[in-house]
Length: 334
Image (cartoon, rainbow, N blue to C red):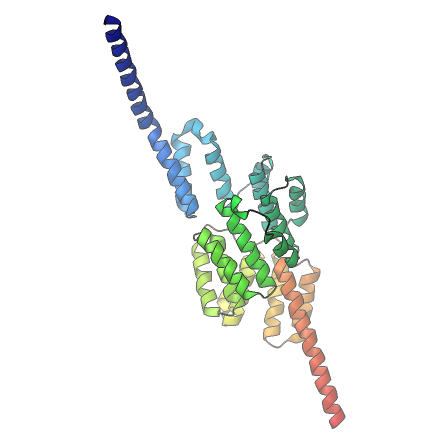
């Protein structure tokens, strides 16, 4: 009986100790767990300012917890979205698939297609690598290959993360636009928006779709929403498209602002030449526009703008052939 009483007291003491230890742990770790959840929610909502605030809190208060993978990944995620110094070397130090994919995306953003291919070559065969191959194919102008890779029915695309699935849908939307398949582009955009409604890339894609639909007012409103996200780094492709939108709107101030932004970006002169070529064609200055577009292509205009410039030149050539044929017919009947 006495032994049972002693054993009961020991068990009660142990229970009380564990309870106190749990309370102390909750009081100590609770704020950090709560902050980690706030970071996760802010990332899901692409609330960049909130993510920055939470990271600053961790820097001031979390000590060694700043070495946690979730904190380091959030810092890298922030730099990938906002632009950051030495991001390439930071990502290159990782050997796992996720960070290799982020490095691939960084190279594609910078137009470094050969370096992006080198990253793909070292990635292990996976669904995520297929997304990377689709992205690179699109950047190389091989739209058909991009769509083929990313619509393979034997692949379980839902095994990817939400962000990765969103990138896949947006890549397919870009490819569909390049092939003037507006219905498919709208469908893929809707799928991306359903997965990640606050993803700024969805807003950019909606802007592209509005341009393709020639809904200039809607495109202008979307551009204002994009510009309101002041944390986004300047982007040659977007600034070029905004300049084209300004030409359609007759917005000379907006056009000037976009050209100034392009001037400040690497290789911006190539894109300025392209914009001026489109502007010349819009004014009916066919020869000037043709020469400017050829110059932009010769200077290394890449991606979808490369295809658009070729398309515009082909339209000019077709128009010149039609005009020549018409003049020949008129001359014969005179």
